[in-house]
Amino acid sequence: MTLPDVDTALARMLARTAPLDEETVGLGEADGRWLAEAVAARRDQPPFDASAMDGWAVRGTDVRPGARLRIVGESAAGGSVDFRLNPGEAARIFTGAPMPEGADAVVIQEKATRQGDAVILGEAGADPAWVRPRGGDFKAEDVLLSAGVRLNPWRLALAASAGVGAVRCGRRPRVALLPNGDELVEPGRPIADHQIFNSAGPALAAFAARCGARPTALPPARDDEAAIRSAVTGAAFDLLVAVGGASVGDHDRVKPALRALGAEMIVEGCAMRPGKPVWFAVLPDGRIVLGLPGNPASALVCAELFLAPLIAGLQGGAPTPRRDSAALAVDLPANGPRDHYMRARLEVGAEGRLLAWPFSNQDSSLVSVMAQADALVRRPPGAPAAVAGEIVEVIRPS
Image (cartoon, rainbow, N blue to C red; front, side, top):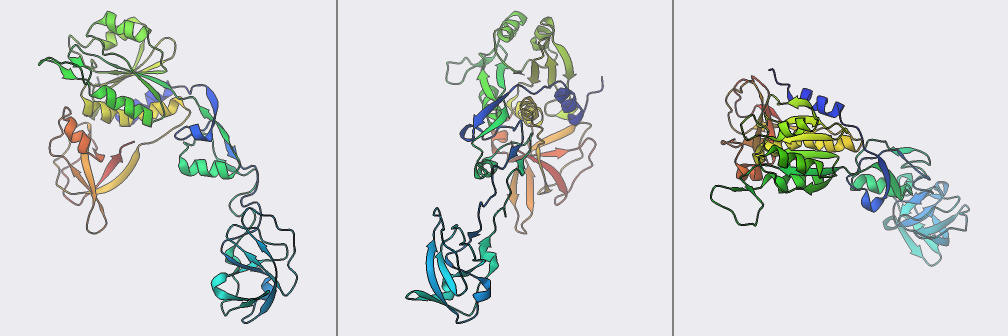
């Protein structure tokens, strides 16, 4: 059987991933959420001509070196202005304050001298650049953020400045994490010599939360079809992530258990390294299942490439991995027939170039290597040997 490449496998998964229902949330709850509808401005920003500096509001036609202007008022941020500047007049003004009617320029305070009830202008004069025009950032009814955009602090600031206090977003998906295997024990509990701690579960829960999901860690299931079926049918989720039991050994019972529940297998393996056993299925009720390898490093590589996009798709978003390029810091041998995602450390070299240092040992069981990695270096199938300095594609963590 010819396995699909990463892009093909992901496309098949996303084709069966429907956005969940929507909800309205306040800005304080919206960070990391995907917008379900556009955000439009409720008024101009700034809502008035405003000063960009502390100084003196003046009429441009009055500005000349040594001009003496009568002070007729003051404008401060947050205050209203109920007077007009006539020829030969000026007003004290502060950053962010509204310009008085009749004023069209600002002389910064360093370029003028106050003498009683008058201000004497210096040599530099006034600069219209010190005036922020009404609507200079955006205007009422301008679409500021489109549906499908993921919110972050910068975008939340934009929504807030437009007067928007709540936004319509896709619901956070419930992601149930099901580690399975008789060898697994939860961290912190007594363990036998022949067992291992469940390290992939906590890592994937944190990963899912960072992607905007509400993760639930289910107790590890035994290598028994009935136990796995019971765990699946008893859990409330939009996306089930099964960790381990994804290969074809006698004790890998996850896929047979799901087939017994009527699941349709969409992807069964991918031409990638690590993570070849990754799989994807759809339950009869439409809920989706992502199967990940049991090795934590393999599971996390697959999470970057598949889990993050699926969580986004459930919220109506369409993310792409954070791809970049870097120069290799070491030589690499030719690659085999599968995409190879190599754990690597990034640093900025002496010439300001981003350098990638792939770790020499890429065994998928090495959690310590994954913990030191800043990125994944992608080596395409059949890539020839690469020398230090060659540019390669890197994927930064979500």
